Structures are given as C-alpha cells and as structure tokens.
Image (cartoon, rainbow, N blue to C red; front, top):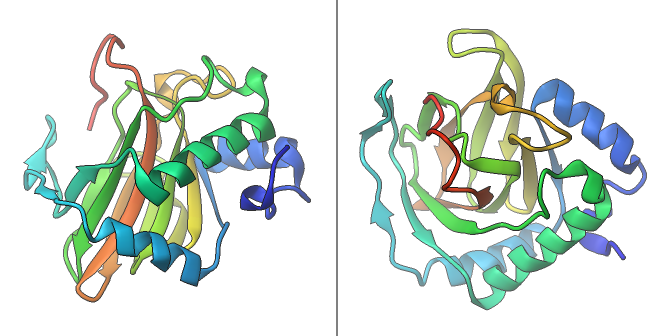
Length: 209
C-alpha cells in the first residue's frame, strides 16, 4: 500500500501523473517537510565526495559538482521505500523491467556555482529518474531540444521530489530523454541532492550529452 511519501500524487491518480510526465518529460512535487529533508542532509554531509570533471561527453558539457554513492543508513532506507512506493503507484505495466534504483548517489553543489549545462542523461538509465532536494535549492529546467525553448522549469527545494522519464517508462525509447539543466545553485555553503537511477550497463551505447 502506498503510504504518505506519495500522498500528493494520490488525488491525481497515476493516469494524470503519467500524462504530465509524458508531455513535459518530468514532474515535481513536495513529499516531505523541509525539516525531514534537512535531517537526511545531516547524514549526507558525513560522506566523502569526489569532484566530477569540469567537462564531460562529446559535447563537452560543463559542470561544477561533486558526488558520492550511497546505499545504507537513513538515506538508503528512504531510497528503498520510495522505490517500492513508486512501483506500487505506477504498477508493473509502467516499467520495462521491475523498478530497481541500482545507482544511488548524492550530488553536492557549492553555492553560486554553474551546476550542469543543458544535456541528456545516458541511455543506460531505465524507467524513471528520481531527484530529491535535501538542502539548499537549485533550478531544474527542461528544454524541447539542446538549442530549443524551455518546456518547463522548477525550483527544487528541500523535500521536493522530481521524477523524470527514462527509456522503458510505458515503452518509451531513447528519444524520450529530455534535455535538462541544473543552475541557480543556492546553499550555505553547499546544496545537496539525492539522485536515484536504474542503470543498465549492458545497453548498446552511452547517451548523447
């Protein structure tokens, strides 16, 4: 049974949520109080972070971010609970394979830095990508194309969950991967964001950046 994590979704029902996600590429809504998100951020601050390259991919996408993997503790428990609830909410017919967030990491952004320039996620991601704001805030923008107009834009605050369509969600192929950007980073001194992905390394190729 779906519990309070997805309560904001329940009045809408999965049909409405799926329609919004397929039209916009993503959806964003609060699932916990700021205080609860900040409690998870306390744990996140204990981890060791690795600074990511300033540029990556064929397009040399610029980024300013550090990250670490996470599997245990309160954050790991939350990730497992969310995975189960999303699987129940959408139902097995929504996913190419059973939903399983095999790649769980925390991204750390320093206040006022670049974030990540417009890009597409790797095609090895499957079903959905989930992002939860833990501390600080940042702007998440979805574009029609790499050089196209803005389709939708949200500010992700502590406790906000963003779900983004990935290949395999209701039969979507690699063309579903929306161009998106992370910027307007605010954090004192850092912003923390939990990222959950179902990563399939056997996919044929890495996505266009």
